[in-house]
Image 1 (cartoon, rainbow, N blue to C red):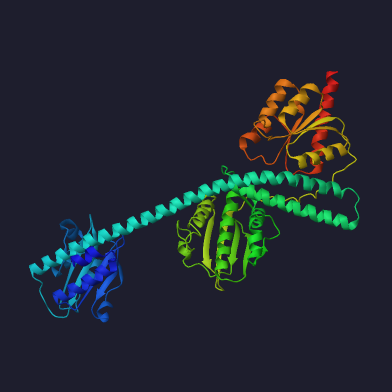
Image 2: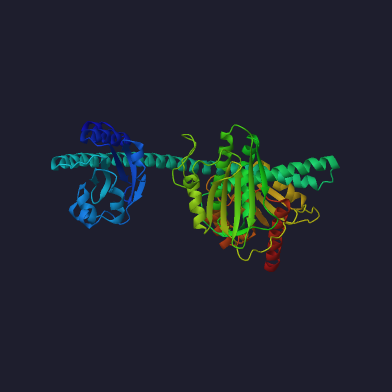
Amino acid sequence: MAVVATQSFDLDEILNLTLRQVVSLFGAESGAVYLSDSDAPTYRRRAAWGPRSRDKSRPAEISFADGFGNLVMRSRAEVITAEYLPHLTGAVADFIRSSSDGSWIWVLFWGKDSPIGMMGLRSHVEYEYSSGEENLLVAISRQLATTIEKVRLYEETCKAYEDLRRTQEQLLQSEKMSAVGQLIAGVAHELNNPLTAILGYAQLLESEGLNERAQDYVGKMFKQAQRTHRVVQNLLSFARQRKPERSEVDVRKVLEETLALRDYDLKVNHIAVEKDLGSEPAMVVADPHQIEQVFLNIINNAVDAVLETGRSGKLKIRVFCDSRFVATQFADDGPGIKDPKRIFDPFYTTKNVGKGTGLGLSICYGIVKEHGGDITAHNASEGGAVIEVRLPIAVPAGAALEAAPVALPKREGAIQGRVLLVEEEEAVLEFERDVLTGAGANVVTANRSEDVKTRLLSEPFDAVIMSGKMPGDWHAKEAYSWLKQNCSGMENHTLFTFSNVEQSDERMFLQENNIPFLVKPFEVADLISQARRLLQKAHAAAASAS
C-alpha cells in the first residue's frame, strides 16, 4: 500500500487499489472511501469495492452539517465502531450504522484540524475486530491521509503554476496590446491627414456643378472616405488607455461602432448579422469605451464559435428596454456553450492553446457588474449560445435629436485677410490653401517651425492656422508660448489642427486658454467658419487699436 501511495499522483487509482487490498486483507465483503471537498462538510464517494447492490443503501454524496460530534472531535478518534453511535451526530450515525450487516467498522482520515475522509468495511458475517486489527486500520488510514494531502498539495501546486502561466501570457498579451495601441495611434495620424484632403476635395467637388454621373461618383467617394474615418476613430477609441468616464450614451450607437470594427471579418467568414435595435434610443449611463470592450469580446467569441462549425453562420443582435434595464442580446448559431455556469470564471476557456486566455468574458463580467448591470449566458433550445447584457436604463431617457444633414460649404461666404498656414503634410497643406484661397483669403504657407518664426517676425499676418503637432518639439503648447512672447496678440488669432487630441492634458490646455482647434478630418465649412471668426477678431482688434 505504501508503494502504491508513493509512486502515483492519481488519487482515485490509489484509493481504489488500497481499498481492494484492505477488503481482501480483512476478509470483508465490501468497502467504500469518502472524501470531503476542501473544508466543506460534504463527503463524496471516491472508491468502492464489492457487490454493487450493497452500495445502493448509501448515497454517493452526504453532508454532515453538524460535524461528527464532540467526542470524536475532542479525542480525534480514528476508529468508529458501534460503541461510538450514541456520541455521533444524527446524520453521521444514520450514515454509518448498518442493521443488515453482521459487522462493520469505519476509520477517519484526519487532516490538520478535521477529518478529510473516511473508509468503511462491511460484511454479513458477524465479526469483532481485534485491537491489533484496529491498529492496522489506523496505520493504513494515516498513510492514506498523508497521501491524500500530498496529492492535493501537488494538484494545488500544478493549478497555481498553470494560473501563473496564464497570468504571464495575459501580461504578455497586455504588453502586445499596449504596443498595438501605440501603433494604431501612429497609423491613425498618418491616415487622418490624407483623409482630410480626400474628404475636403470631395466636398469642394460637390459644389462645382458637376454632371449627374460625376456628382454620383463624388458622393460615393465621400461616403467611403467617411466610413474609413469612422473605422480609424473606432480603432483609436478602443486602443486608447484612459480613465473610465461615464456619460449618458445610446447602447445602439456603441453597438454600431463595435460592429464596424469586425465588419470585414464578419463578411469574409460569411457570418450574417441580423440587427433588431429598436426605433427608440436605448440610453444608459456608462463608459462607452468599456461597454464597447464588452460587446467586442462577446462578438469575438461568437465569431470563433461559428468558425468552429466550418460553415457560414448567423449572429442575431437585439436591443430592447424595460422599465429598469436596457438589454442587449447576442445569439449565434455555433455549437453552444459547454459549461454556461463557468463561462465567466477567470482562465476558463474551451479554445485551443494560443487562441484565448480565458479572461475576456471574466473582464466583461467585472465591467458589467461595476456598471450595476448583469450578464448571463445560456444555450438556445434550437442550438447556439445566447449572451445577454443588461445595464440600468438612464432616467429620464431624453429623445434623441436627429443629426442634421451635412450642408455643403457655401463658396460665396468670402473671407478677407492674410493667413499664415502651417502644415507638415503636403496634401493637407494644399487642400487647406485651396479652401482658404477659394474663400478669399491671402494665404502664405510654411511647413517648418523655423520658417514660421522667420515670417512672423518679418511679415504682418492677420491669423495663423497651424498643425498642433509639427515635426520636432514645436507642438501647440510651445507654439502658443512662442507667439505670446514674440508676437504678442497673435496667440489670440491662432487656430490649431490635430490628427487627434487624445491626451487629456493637451485638450485641457486648449480649453483653459480658449484656443480654437479642429480635429482632422474636418469639414470644409468648419475650416472656413473658423478662419472667418479669426480674421473678424483680428480686424476688430486692429480697428480698436487705431
